[in-house]
Length: 164
Length: 407
Image (cartoon, rainbow over all chains, first blue to last red; front, side):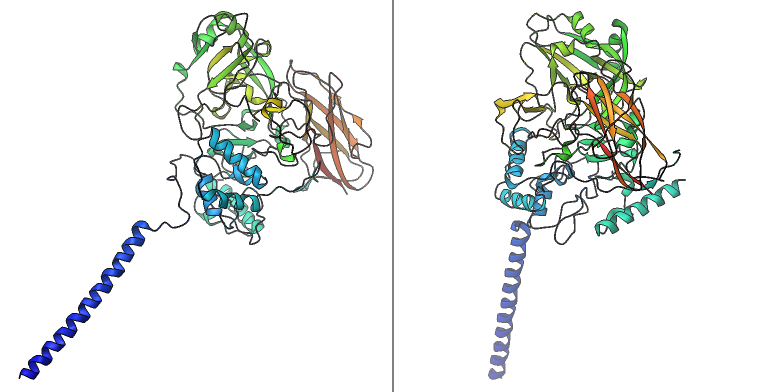
């Protein structure tokens, strides 16, 4: 009888131990989840909330993509490459994405544009994201040597009617 | 009709997706509401009153150019007039309560006029005036210049109706030390900060006092389109479009060169002394652009014309020359080896563009480019190559050309 009681006690003790273990694990997991939920910042995170604008943002790429994988973001037309999300988050709050994608410049040239926007257009400090944005722009929107006069391209041929 | 239109649009989007190899996810969602950026203003409802064939460079702010073949009209219609905005267009315009204020250190007093007062107090004039964006042609500069990449179509010549700025300034009274005027408009800064001025440029007092310098409320006999400055704007032909302030509310008479937004730095300024392409130019070596250089466009035929051997090719277009007039226009089908003189009409009035036309005999089958070259009243012609590089890519007046094949 005593033995049985002891056995029962032992079982109960083991069960309690296991329960505490499970509860502790659950607690740790939920704390971890809570930590991730409240403190983890998915990269990239827009610095400002998306601005309320009556005009929908343009949807189609302005310039044929020259990225190696050839894909562009449907919302902005930005070439998908390292850093494109940071560019989207920081460069399309105030102006159309096409103001970026139709331009070509060196890293110094892009930095000059950022400084001008910070000086006169209320662009915020890009902090540690600046280097990544500049790398992205300098790689994907670099100048090409156009010479003094490029060839005529994208000509759509058609029959000219009504001539003698 | 509606069904056919949307079908056409869908197939157009579909073909784009094929070209870029990009899945156009929104294609089935809401393409009707989006401008076809980098291509054409697919849905004119995006900017009411504008032609579906215009090319959108950006929608925030709106910047739209007109392909040259859509500039064939002698008087540019409202739907084909380019748009160059620096900020957001004002909303809820109250024409009845709109006012123009004249102030500044060189105005004898400060006075405000309603639009009705402007109409009743001063004599009304109508002029056809060429307005060209200072950055028209920027896309061809090498190394590339920053900003909207205009090709050739940021130019227009509509009929403007309003009162002479000089009549208003005489009514207010200006002091002897007046050297410049500067305008202010009601557009909104892209940052939406109400304290920030979008653009406030101006001209020397001599340009302000010219007969053709108007404070206008009508274009081609109708209200000015909102994107082009409704209900009131300055219009000064022959100078960069940015001096013709839109949504006009104030004109300051200044005793110094106006120092408003976009009067300094690289804005609408070029190196006083020519520089090599790509050179860094210090601020103090930059000079404000005044009259635009001689230029022309071929508005007919559209580039890409196929004709049969033995057919004559009719060519026509417009030419303009800033404050000057155009003396002659030549066309070439052999890259400038030989030039043929075109017929040239006189301007409708000072500062209006002039029309030219020519008939070309193309001797054999093959690929041709038709080039047009205008010469101004001082004997200066358009260059065939892109002229002097400058940091912001202004004043590219290189000859326009179209491609033609004879078969």
